[in-house]
Image 1: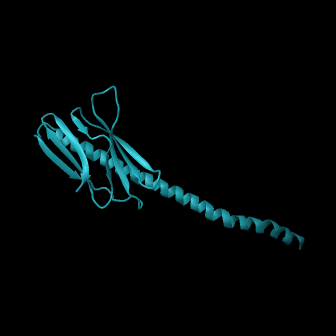
Image 2 (image 1 turned 60 degrees about the vertical axis):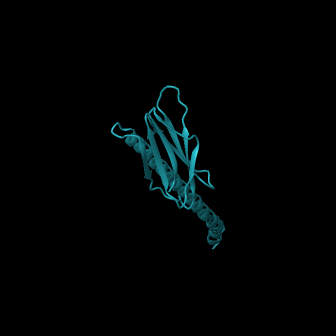
Length: 158
Protein backbone atom coordinates (compact mmCIF):
# COMPACT_ATOMS: atom_id res chain seq x y z
CA UNK A 1 0.00 0.00 0.00
CA UNK A 2 2.72 2.55 0.71
CA UNK A 3 3.89 2.42 -2.92
CA UNK A 4 0.48 3.65 -4.18
CA UNK A 5 0.62 6.69 -1.90
CA UNK A 6 4.11 7.53 -3.13
CA UNK A 7 2.94 7.20 -6.75
CA UNK A 8 0.10 9.63 -6.07
CA UNK A 9 2.49 12.05 -4.38
CA UNK A 10 4.67 12.03 -7.52
CA UNK A 11 2.01 11.91 -10.24
CA UNK A 12 -0.50 14.51 -8.99
CA UNK A 13 1.96 17.44 -9.11
CA UNK A 14 3.23 16.28 -12.53
CA UNK A 15 -0.34 16.20 -13.88
CA UNK A 16 -1.09 19.64 -12.46
CA UNK A 17 2.05 21.07 -14.06
CA UNK A 18 1.06 19.50 -17.40
CA UNK A 19 -2.34 21.19 -17.23
CA UNK A 20 -0.56 24.57 -17.29
CA UNK A 21 2.43 23.78 -19.52
CA UNK A 22 0.67 22.16 -22.50
CA UNK A 23 -1.76 25.03 -23.26
CA UNK A 24 1.03 27.58 -22.78
CA UNK A 25 3.32 25.66 -25.14
CA UNK A 26 0.55 25.30 -27.74
CA UNK A 27 -0.15 29.03 -27.55
CA UNK A 28 3.52 29.94 -28.07
CA UNK A 29 3.83 27.55 -31.02
CA UNK A 30 0.66 28.90 -32.67
CA UNK A 31 1.76 32.54 -32.23
CA UNK A 32 5.13 31.75 -33.79
CA UNK A 33 3.45 29.95 -36.68
CA UNK A 34 1.04 32.85 -37.27
CA UNK A 35 3.89 35.41 -37.23
CA UNK A 36 5.89 33.29 -39.67
CA UNK A 37 2.90 32.94 -41.98
CA UNK A 38 2.30 36.72 -41.94
CA UNK A 39 5.97 37.41 -42.69
CA UNK A 40 6.02 34.96 -45.58
CA UNK A 41 2.86 36.44 -47.11
CA UNK A 42 4.24 39.95 -46.63
CA UNK A 43 7.53 38.97 -48.33
CA UNK A 44 5.64 37.38 -51.21
CA UNK A 45 3.53 40.50 -51.71
CA UNK A 46 6.61 42.75 -51.61
CA UNK A 47 8.32 40.53 -54.18
CA UNK A 48 5.24 40.61 -56.42
CA UNK A 49 5.08 44.43 -56.29
CA UNK A 50 8.83 44.75 -56.93
CA UNK A 51 8.71 42.36 -59.87
CA UNK A 52 5.71 44.18 -61.35
CA UNK A 53 7.49 47.54 -61.06
CA UNK A 54 10.53 46.13 -62.82
CA UNK A 55 8.43 44.58 -65.60
CA UNK A 56 6.50 47.82 -66.12
CA UNK A 57 9.76 49.78 -66.31
CA UNK A 58 11.39 47.41 -68.81
CA UNK A 59 8.25 47.33 -70.95
CA UNK A 60 7.85 51.09 -71.22
CA UNK A 61 11.62 51.63 -71.53
CA UNK A 62 11.87 49.41 -74.62
CA UNK A 63 12.96 51.32 -77.71
CA UNK A 64 9.82 50.25 -79.58
CA UNK A 65 7.67 52.18 -77.06
CA UNK A 66 7.10 55.82 -77.89
CA UNK A 67 6.29 58.53 -75.37
CA UNK A 68 3.14 57.92 -73.35
CA UNK A 69 1.73 56.30 -70.28
CA UNK A 70 1.20 52.76 -69.13
CA UNK A 71 -0.60 51.45 -66.05
CA UNK A 72 -1.01 48.04 -64.48
CA UNK A 73 -3.30 47.02 -61.66
CA UNK A 74 -1.64 44.74 -59.14
CA UNK A 75 -3.43 41.73 -57.80
CA UNK A 76 -2.31 42.21 -54.21
CA UNK A 77 -4.39 41.25 -51.20
CA UNK A 78 -6.15 44.17 -49.48
CA UNK A 79 -5.37 42.63 -46.06
CA UNK A 80 -2.76 40.20 -44.80
CA UNK A 81 -4.01 38.08 -41.93
CA UNK A 82 -6.64 40.73 -41.24
CA UNK A 83 -4.16 43.63 -41.14
CA UNK A 84 -3.86 46.50 -43.60
CA UNK A 85 -0.37 47.35 -44.80
CA UNK A 86 1.49 50.29 -46.25
CA UNK A 87 3.63 50.11 -49.36
CA UNK A 88 6.52 52.60 -49.50
CA UNK A 89 8.90 53.25 -52.40
CA UNK A 90 12.31 54.70 -51.55
CA UNK A 91 15.53 55.47 -53.39
CA UNK A 92 18.50 53.38 -52.29
CA UNK A 93 21.66 55.42 -51.88
CA UNK A 94 24.39 53.96 -54.02
CA UNK A 95 27.81 55.10 -55.08
CA UNK A 96 29.07 52.45 -57.48
CA UNK A 97 26.42 52.51 -60.21
CA UNK A 98 24.42 54.94 -62.28
CA UNK A 99 21.33 52.73 -62.15
CA UNK A 100 18.38 53.66 -59.95
CA UNK A 101 17.66 51.20 -57.18
CA UNK A 102 14.26 51.13 -55.49
CA UNK A 103 13.48 49.74 -52.05
CA UNK A 104 9.88 48.51 -51.84
CA UNK A 105 8.86 48.17 -48.18
CA UNK A 106 5.60 46.72 -46.89
CA UNK A 107 4.67 47.16 -43.23
CA UNK A 108 1.68 45.62 -41.48
CA UNK A 109 -0.22 48.24 -39.50
CA UNK A 110 -0.60 47.38 -35.83
CA UNK A 111 2.30 44.93 -35.84
CA UNK A 112 6.07 45.03 -36.01
CA UNK A 113 6.16 42.87 -39.16
CA UNK A 114 7.60 44.31 -42.34
CA UNK A 115 9.26 43.07 -45.50
CA UNK A 116 11.16 44.76 -48.28
CA UNK A 117 12.66 43.99 -51.65
CA UNK A 118 15.19 45.74 -53.87
CA UNK A 119 14.36 46.58 -57.50
CA UNK A 120 17.10 47.53 -59.96
CA UNK A 121 15.95 49.96 -62.65
CA UNK A 122 17.72 51.94 -65.36
CA UNK A 123 19.31 55.38 -65.36
CA UNK A 124 16.35 57.23 -66.84
CA UNK A 125 13.72 56.52 -64.17
CA UNK A 126 12.58 58.44 -61.12
CA UNK A 127 9.76 58.45 -58.58
CA UNK A 128 8.71 60.50 -55.58
CA UNK A 129 10.82 59.70 -52.52
CA UNK A 130 8.92 57.86 -49.75
CA UNK A 131 5.91 57.36 -52.00
CA UNK A 132 3.38 55.45 -49.90
CA UNK A 133 0.09 53.72 -50.46
CA UNK A 134 -2.26 52.15 -47.90
CA UNK A 135 -3.81 48.82 -48.81
CA UNK A 136 -7.53 48.48 -48.52
CA UNK A 137 -10.52 48.14 -50.76
CA UNK A 138 -8.80 49.78 -53.74
CA UNK A 139 -6.23 47.79 -55.71
CA UNK A 140 -2.77 49.25 -56.19
CA UNK A 141 -2.16 50.74 -59.63
CA UNK A 142 1.37 51.30 -60.99
CA UNK A 143 1.73 54.14 -63.48
CA UNK A 144 4.68 54.85 -65.77
CA UNK A 145 4.89 58.04 -67.84
CA UNK A 146 7.54 58.14 -70.56
CA UNK A 147 8.70 61.44 -72.05
CA UNK A 148 11.74 61.76 -74.33
CA UNK A 149 14.50 60.14 -72.22
CA UNK A 150 12.87 59.88 -68.80
CA UNK A 151 10.33 57.69 -67.07
CA UNK A 152 8.30 58.73 -64.02
CA UNK A 153 6.83 55.99 -61.84
CA UNK A 154 3.88 56.56 -59.53
CA UNK A 155 1.71 54.42 -57.33
CA UNK A 156 -1.94 54.85 -56.47
CA UNK A 157 -5.44 53.44 -56.33
CA UNK A 158 -8.03 53.11 -59.02
